[in-house]
Amino acid sequence: MTIEHLDAVEAMIGEINRSDSVFFPSSYWDDLNKQNLDMLEAGGLANFKRTLSQNYFNWLVTSPRHPLFRHAFKEWCHHPDALPLTTNLAEADGLRITTGTGQRALALSALRLNFYRLYVCFVWGIMCRHDHHRFRDLLQEPSVGNPLRVMRGQRLLSQDLASSILECNILANITAGISRPRIAEVGAGYGRLAYAYVQSQPGQYFVFDIPPALGVAQWYLEQTLGVDRVFQFRHFDRLTDVDSEIRAASVVMLTPNQMQQFPDGYFDVALSISTLPEMRQDQVDLYLKEFQRLSRGHIFLKQWKAWRNPTDGTDLTAESYRLAPQWRVTLDRTDPVVPTFFNRVWTRKPVHARGGSCRATHSLGAALRRAWLSKTTAAHLRCSAQIRAARPLSDPSSRPPRGRSGCGARPDRVAGSAPRRSA
Image (cartoon, rainbow, N blue to C red; front, side):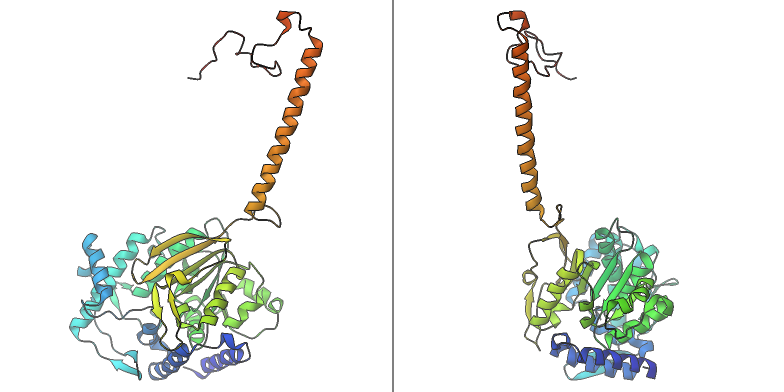
């Protein structure tokens, strides 16, 4: 990393250290961050997609026995295509992975490289079947960060882009009809989804994350989107101090404690991908509470169905994520690519009456119906009384048709005639 980017990361660390301890990295991420910094020092920012990405959502699947390979291959068998026959992967130099004792370089054999290439092809096919908005026609995997190059002709295919396109489809569905949605993500990795979203859809994307991930994401998004589209991380005491700059940006970079500066309902969607189980339980509770406060529309979680954090002891399942009653589940599915993950969207129930809930609105509606019926009944009785007063009952011809009050009688219903039936 350059001195400039190291300075930015130091400022981010300082911001978090001055905040409440609930925003400090969990023990799990404290350990992982040290290894990530070692990776950055060894490989540099220019190669982070061959190092840090393996700690985010890129799966280094290099064996046909791997559960993810078996799942993706099964999907390909049900929906075969020619993609595995039309791609190539020449090299994978500079790969580094984390281990129980640190991080190390990794050399892959030609056979393992081939299995990785096949896995990416299978994942790409899964994505294409779920990409109803056809974002794959709009997006390309950036070469920034030096990703593993699974090539189809001149096009670079990647797991990260496939995952981002799947997630963009969910975001497009739940923000339909909103002209410029505000999306907030906690734990954005290197910013893969932020990049894909602002390149394919209108709106703003807010990243809340801890360093060094936030520093890497800021650098990556500046390289791929342009510096003028990124609000760079900085400390501010009041949102009003930077509001005009934030509104002008496509992507906004912030530390997690800064989300408390935003008012209730500021965002249309709050989301998190593969982050919450890696936190302490008090942090999980905080972020779920903040999501419900900050989002006026939807909450999207993509998390492990069941995973125990070995360092912090957090043990979460899909049933652990419970929101307040005003939130209802509108999407709940197994992730198409990683079946050990769930995709779930909650939508805030609409409030139809000012200061009240749907239940209050229903009560108001019932009261209005009762008032209307009472008024109608009174008018009906007055009309009947007027008819009786105007026509003497001794004159049979003046009586209304049998069985009817005479008030508003239909002309097609005269005494002794059968009711008409519509064709």
